[in-house]
Image: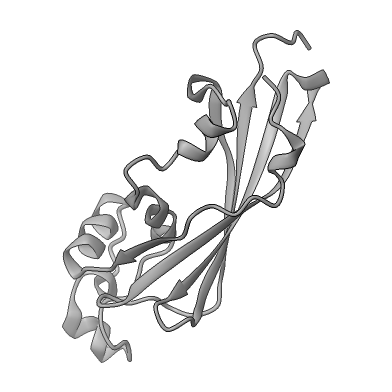
Length: 152
């Protein structure tokens, strides 16, 4: 399987999420975040926040809001059984808060191969904005697709 180079530049449908306090608390607890600013509204406000702030790395979850968050890979002919998480990075511009509606807009920005095509890489850049258009963060994810038909 080869990821088509024509995939580069493909924009994916935007995904939105209404950020809820309970969800932020659950996420903070699940990642072991012990700072009460992420779970207690009084503490958050005492530290100058208008509500519970979105914990680091939470933003990747926005795209999981869709019924089939990996449909774009299937559409490209990628066998999901061969996909590995390669890397992920976040560049923050502003904080998101409980009560915000956040929107993720993703674009496939690169594909490349290594090991003679045994490993293929798909790079996806995602801009996350508040509903009013304010930029919250830029995310980059790299997926690795193993190509079992190629022996390195």
